[in-house]
Amino acid sequence: MPKILGIDLPDNKHLNISLTYLYGIGLTSADKICAEAKIDPHKKAGQLTSDELNAILKILQESYLVEGDLRRSVAQNIRRLTAIGSYRGMRHKRNLPVRGQRTKTNARTRKGAKKTVGAIRERSERKQANAAAEAKAAANDAKK
Image (cartoon, rainbow, N blue to C red; front, side, top):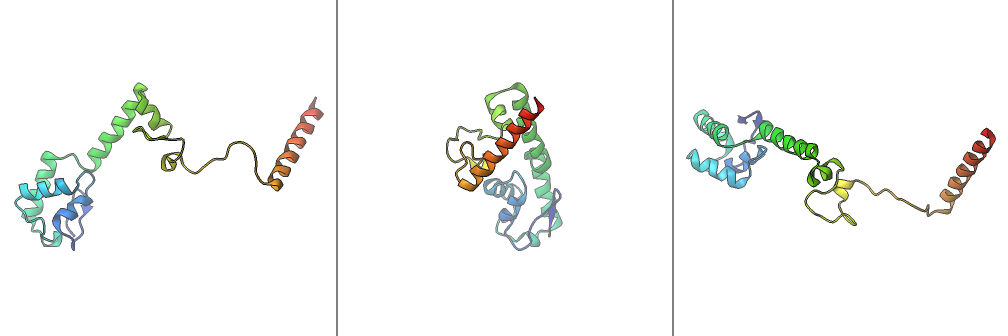
């Protein structure tokens, strides 16, 4: 298993697919890297020589922001947006969709599971809630 920037690339996949295991490298970037390094993109990653791996590593370090540096940059940009109080920053802070999606319905990935607000529907739960409210009111009256 060849290792690039601390990430193990799968041996049995083509090189252009294996390179997409790196954060920040998609299929188009992987094809460009293969062309620049003059390596067949359909060659299996396990068949790469050390010279080819070094060529790929050199291209990645010179031309691309990948893995930890890219993650750090994205996190820094989000922190900057929240610090200046921009609309996008506030949406990040409140865990709401940032790019203009609707939130009246949907948006469950960002908002989490539904939280019911308002009336309790089932009769047994309603009785328990009323009993708890009456006990609380009696306790408050006893304190006075």
